[in-house]
Image 1 (cartoon, rainbow, N blue to C red):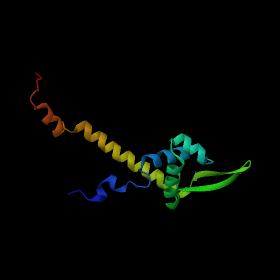
Image 2 (image 1 turned 90 degrees about the vertical axis):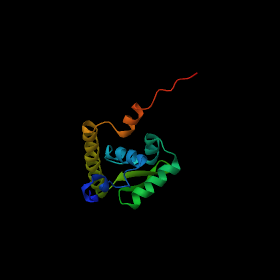
Image 3 (image 1 turned 30 degrees about the horizontal axis):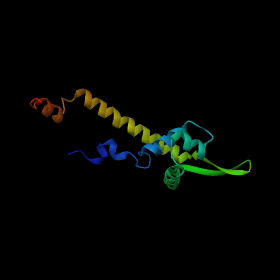
Image 4 (image 1 turned 90 degrees about the horizontal axis):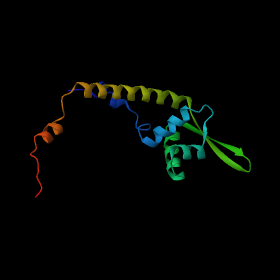
Length: 128
């Protein structure tokens, strides 16, 4: 029996493993000074509400920070990756890389899946 500690998937942090949050964090990693709320919304193709929900989750986890800045007559929100968030996200990426490498190795060495074998054994259906 494999212990959970032996499986790298047990160490994938759920806060990062959601596709929209992964997109947000990837964008923040690529930008040293942070990204405006509207910039993230556009780049990640999210609605205001969805982006707010994901940013709240990330902020509560200490992964991102949000600064309010004056931009002309309006206030703008700038989102940035915290130092702690950067470290945790790096660990997540390393773990994800290990998970993907193991999966690729298994695909390269495993025989055909039972569903493929069963499908090849099905009789051909002829139409009248």
